[in-house]
Length: 600
Image 1 (tube, rainbow, N blue to C red):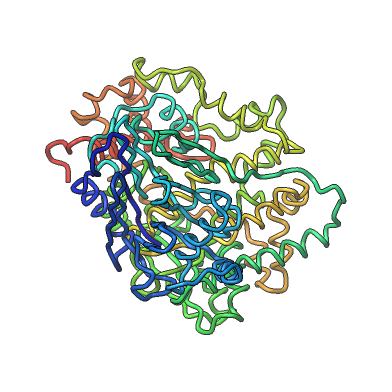
Image 2 (cartoon, rainbow, N blue to C red):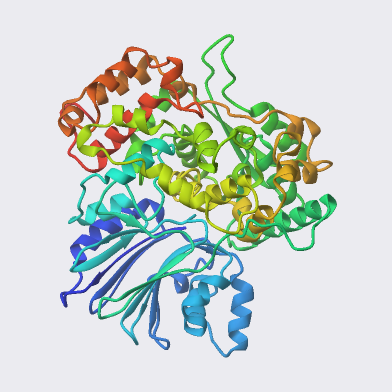
């Protein structure tokens, strides 16, 4: 809902307000409704507001509580803020605003670092405690809201986006060789705390940081996901009833925590359709929005799901808008999307979210979306394939998920950037953590606590917030995720996956929507590695800047360019390896290096 940034000095100097102004300007699109600044000694905050709860000036930020001597900058939404507000009033606290931001301040004063365990929502925030000259940073359980860090011996800076930190200057932009290995193995996911740049780190999900005046830093993980069966087994009917109840509560929380209308991004799939079904009787004149793309012609794969989204819109009488995007617009607008990427992301959904959000933001400020349901309830095709595989947990996971094996990575990346098989080491360690009963429990826990943070959660924040649109994800309610994590894997995989959601949708949604195969509708201009898309990638990878950077081995690049659609030139989940290479180089040229001559 906002953009935040700040600087804390460790050397006795004043914060660099000019640098913070540049950082704040970079975040302007995240919060077009108000801009604010606060400075106190070694600390300075900037804030860009998207007004959603308490639209008055009383809720502007940075929010200063003079009585408590606390100052806050906050990005996100605390869905249970009304309940917490009542609890805090009973403790004697008085409020000067009506929103969730002030609830965070009072909660911190009342409960200290542990206040985060009481929050149900998505958040990244910073609190300056003038009493102790301490800075406290926190991020929500699934990293739905971002928080990037740049720390030197002299100061700490933080921001809601990586490009905002770069705008401040003084960032080491050397490539992180470990992060590169993760990036090219896990579909551009770089798990926290790393990014592809050595000088930028990100606060991990479910984590807080406290900076003391003497330079001491205290890091705390305040929540972990338990993926073990309950001591008392539940029947299938009990699991389904609990799922229905928990999802309904999640949707209701995300509806009520807004003083503006809330719509739904309706893809026509089970997940978003189920959200519409649960909202339809609570929201008169519910707004729904769908996007599709131009087909490539007779016999080509269908590039929209309007057939199904129209059914849902008609069934529930929503006020529906569908947007059909021609392929030439996808290519023309792709540079904008890359310029808005806080980290490099190759999913075709990135450009889809960017173009859809532009249109939806003209209609509403808040929407709900079905992201996370496939990871939480076992909806992807690779999960049963992993389950049926033999070998160690790492072997079962990697052979159905890794984009390329380590040997191929060494052929692709230049020797100066070589590292050991660090991604296998990371994944093996994550899968091997305690409190997961079965292999798929390990996989789903890794997905929702680590991998999902960067894909799809990052793009769901990043692209819509470029247009001042907040997206809420009911399937990533931590109580719902905890319930699903304790379910027997067989229950989730029943009937082709996501059985609990299909079961609770029965009778609410049309059977045709429930029983349809899972959709992976393409963005044709980007799915097929040919024509203008291929020409663009060839220009990037053969550019002087790319060759000078020396990141890729030219023989590998030339092999992909010679036959980009060869079977071995796609990843295990059907992504173009050539696009992976081109996208990272393009992102670096846009965000880190001056653009080569002829680029715009």
